[in-house]
Amino acid sequence: MTFRIVLLGAATALATFTTALASAQELAPQPPQQPPPAPPSVSSPCGGQSPADAWWTGPMLANSANTLPRGHLLLEPYIYDVTTQGSYDRAGVRHSAPRAHGFGSLTYALYGLTDRVAVGLIPTAGFNAVSGGPNSSGVGLGDAGLLTQVRLTHNRPCSHMPTISVAVQETFPTGHYDRLGDRPSDGFGSGAYTTAVSIYSQKYFWMPNGRIVRMRLNFSQAFSNTVDVEGVSVYGTDAGFRGHATPGSSSFIDAAWEYSLTRRWVLALDATYRHARNTRAIGIDRLGGGAGTPSGIVLDSGSSDAFGLAPAIEYSWTPNIGVLLGVRAMVAGRNASTTVTPAIAINFVR
Image (cartoon, helix red, strand yellow):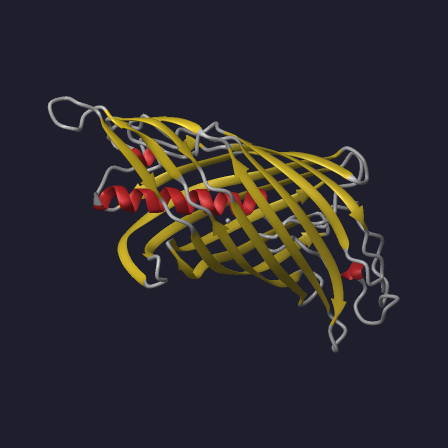
């Protein structure tokens, strides 16, 4: 039972990180999403550093409110390690637990249909390493997402109006989630179709020393359908289980700041909050109940809250290619895993 709890924590942490990145959707930073800028001017019309003199890769988690210009492509692969170190109980008290690692990758591939509309594909993959139990049998595909983003407004120099866009992401159940046998660490998906609706916003500010701070404030709401479940699954069910599970809806808020230290170097910070509602699995245990009689089972995860911080440093070789190195830490919560997630990403705009 301890092993399953640890595995469920690792799978939950991996799913949380993937959802924040993909639907904020626990996914992710994006580069400037515009053609190569003209040579930088000495200063901006607002005074201080020119926006063309600041090269960004984006913070670790907050998606950009900008959309790609028509015909332009963005590629941004991530590699990360979700390290589960314990959990917060329903009273918010932290408890230690055996360490588990959820190694994963996530890639954004976005394309500008028009100057205001972008579409994209977000594939994921992972490998789980668990103390006291079997690791994953190999690298497995996780759930994949399709994204559509529409820009509503654009933040012009010295304007009070931020850039605002609306995004809809549909996540498809391409990862294994049930009938996992004696390797529950092979669970990389949820089995559910998940729709996330997000509002992204972005605005530039100038510090007293003239340097630029770029701020993003994003809101997301995700809903999932009911899925059939059989046997050992990511929902904590046992080998004899047959029934269904209903993942709880989730809300996500991400505020992010980037400080242009120099043209190429940027300091970034995300502050996040996620609320997930109860996930329920209902079914029968075909192996229980005595004398071979199936017994009814109801499993409730309970609602959860998690607060996180994600500091990062960005470096860009050119306005179109850069690298990000950061770490996301869940610093407080209720009925949630405590995780530390180092990550590295490279983004490229063409």
